[in-house]
Image 1: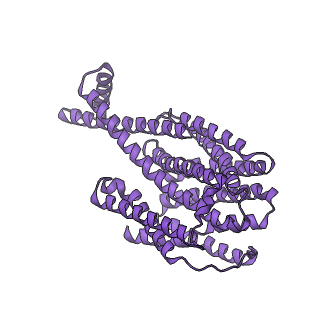
Image 2: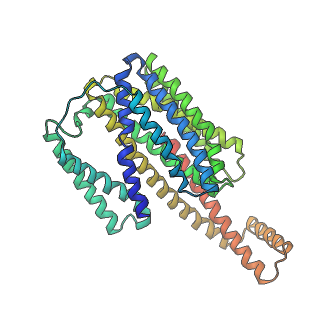
Image 3: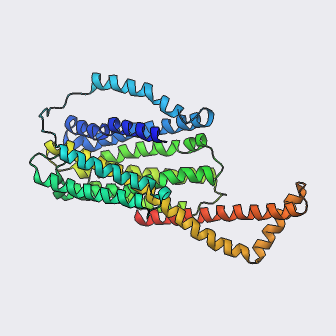
Length: 392
């Protein structure tokens, strides 16, 4: 596990700058009236990559091992490296700035300790000394980072960007939107595999249409942002987000594949309608020399909120499942017509399968317990999806 975390850090060091640099190149390469469309095209490529990656990754996990999902990325990385050298134009701004080492160290300390606390909080316990120490270190490093950046003429991160209301509100929307979307994306995949009878490859196939829908509607909303106020597209997107998550709150073990695909489509279309316009609106009106810094900050917010969303949603799900399990367990201890009918049905099925005597009673109790846990999990997911609808 330690080596996996280490190499993921190395991967993040190399991959982290790619998205903000891509946005900066887009903003330098396209005139203002075409930047919304450019962001949309960028999201189309992202969507198709996600669609193919999920299917290939699910197939490799099912037939080979999880390690194979990393091997398959190598040739695409090599191809991308050569294409970048051949096709991407040089940025016009070649000015050099002094490196803010204290700002870099304090920001890295804040991010590492904060993200470690978020990812390990459920395992170690949110009130444990280890997690509280990490949060304390993160707070100290964050305050030091703010003091350092505000005192320098050439800071690592120009916090004056947040004086721009469009950028500040755009980052807040980005944080909330990504927190809900990324947190629930992770848990929806688990729901499909652990509660419903789908394997990783089938989950990848289920998510193929919605990945394509995200790309198509990102392009449409990006182009629309060049023509009208992007806030209208975002209002439409957040409204359908709420409706989609409300639909998810009615999912059961009997939900059909078609219904699941439809709900996933609504969710991805909504994200497409909000993502490109929000990027465009956030960068609108910023001086050209600050676009690269703004793109980096925007994606930093997205990265933190995604991790925060997964940790928050997983903790919420676990707590709600425990509450529902206790309530259903208390009902199981009593005698109700539904419980009696279920127990009688299980007795009969086990007797038909050849079980006898005490073994029927033991297995009936075990099966009832598994049904209680499954029902508690489903009800916890319902509460989580309703919360997602409210936050949207």
